[in-house]
Image (cartoon, rainbow, N blue to C red; front, side):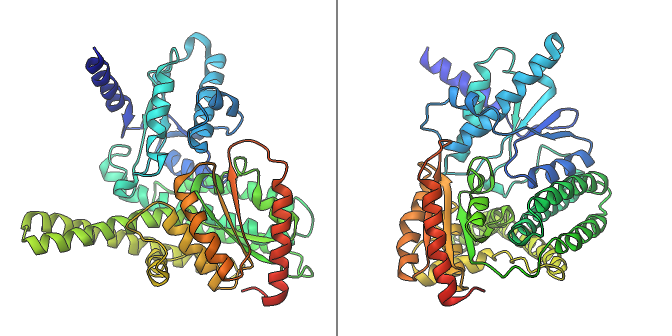
Length: 450
């Protein structure tokens, strides 16, 4: 009996979690940060998909109700988002509600990060709720650098991926524009309002131009937005201590999950720069090329020609993809930097060299710790005045980051603080961040900033 139930569970996972064609469905995207998810939704809309970004964090109590507290916090938040959305849809439509009309988007990563299990756990919860077992979960995986096979018709995949990558990059740039301008804005609140308007304009631009391949039109819209953002800066305000933010990708970018830590840092005198989402996309592409290179050496030694040919193709494809991504990144950042001195993104290969040089961690271990530890070291080397590590409580990769990075920063005399998040409001957190910013200000007075 137990074997039958186990096989049935595997069958359900295969049938209701996977790469499904999203055409003709309401495609539901969880919000990871206030910009990127919306721009990506615009790309899907351009290809005829009824895509939308779900309201976030409002359903946190629902997420907590169906979890034990042992899960990674982003799992709780995103579960609450989909349950809250479905609850509202059932109330709105009543008998007309049809769960087969919806497709929930929840990507995954390979281990040891628990992100790879979110969509499986969400599937179990949806299956336990009457009427929601037919809501399919569509997914992409870091195992193939988020290949779109199965979601979008094959003939459209290349153009879609180009527009999708651009949407991530433009979202990162809007974030960096926000963090560059807001600490120096002429009047309080004007930058937040400006970025919300820019998000709306660029979402419409991606929805209009992605399918036609006219990505230059999107970049022209971005250029005009950046020009306008520059005018919001009060030049009489002196530059402030520069803080580098690293950590787990979801919580560090999801403003409500981290209780708007960057804004708190700004309140106490910081200019902060968060790690980008594009960095993770570049990392997954780089990682697949790196693994293919290792496989090539092994096959060459064993003279396995069939496998050698397969992994050579894989190696070339992922390297060409990474070359394209870097080329686009350089082009767009260079355009924006004509108007605003936003920070560049790190090259993943360089970050691997940083780890090898310092002999503190390895890409062989994997996870975001690779990026967070090396980025913290790079920030310190370039004169940043402090490092903040934001992550979900109990997150294994981020606890690895904390255990390695904290003593490294102490040795380099760079202020450092861990910010773990689980949805609770910790009364001492703001005091700790304020103390950290005092230390960062002292570092700034002694050493300046880049």
